[in-house]
Amino acid sequence: MRKKIIAGNWKMNLRLEEAKAIARGLVSAANSSEFEVMVFPSALHLESVSAIAEDSKLTVGAQNAYQSGLTAMTGEISPDQLAELGISTVLVGHSERRQFLSETSEFDNEKIQFFLKSGLRVVYCVGETWAEREKGNTFTVLSDQIKKGLRDITSDQFQNLVIAYEPVWAIGTGKVATPVEAEEAHAFLRKEIAGLFVSADKIAESIQILYGGSVKPDNLASLLAKPNIDGGLVGGASQKLDSFLGLLK
Image 1 (cartoon, helix red, strand yellow):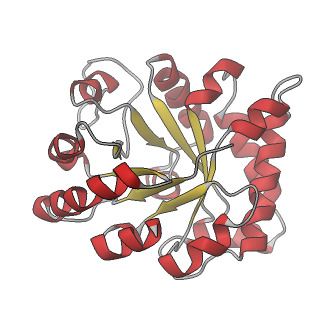
Image 2 (cartoon, helix red, strand yellow):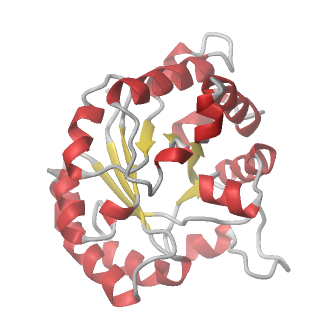
Image 3 (cartoon, helix red, strand yellow):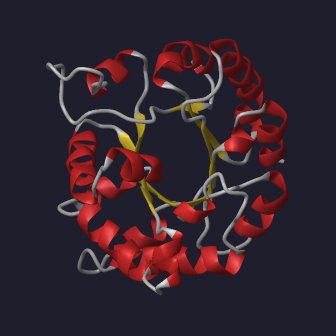
């Protein structure tokens, strides 16, 4: 049975006191929730939020890191530095980094390989634009992102990997893929992962695949009802305590 995950990506939002207040409000909820609860604060807030979450079931992850130990790389964060804060989860391949910072699936693969070897848990994001969907290229895009992003990942490393399907056209737009559309994409992703290895059905069945894109308390239940959707990677609705708690209910 795959445990469901509700993950809040706070992006470049929230003042420090706001982030700390949400984290404090989530600790008890995370401890009693049937879900695994994650938050991905701004890098500047990681230390404060991880201190609040210490000794609780609230997972604190980084929105980004660089694929190296301590080195001369201005503006980046090393997994070694994350480990000092007790942080062992990191996002890779979010559509905003692909779209605005020109990250490619090949570059993401370098990150994923390094992070998994470093003992980090990776949430790898994939998804198509509206233009790609309109042209009927959704599955071509997803297949390409999975095959390039997960190239040379070994079967035993998949236990530390989570996939997030986030159609770019649904992120921050108020649009949301219907449960049927989302389930179709999730089922395809699971099939693509199964095709990466010989006899990989067990790996594909065990990996958690989240949906991201205008997830709110009023549409989450219908998405989670689908057999291949294992949770949500949530943006705006995770940035207010009341709506985050609403997701957990």
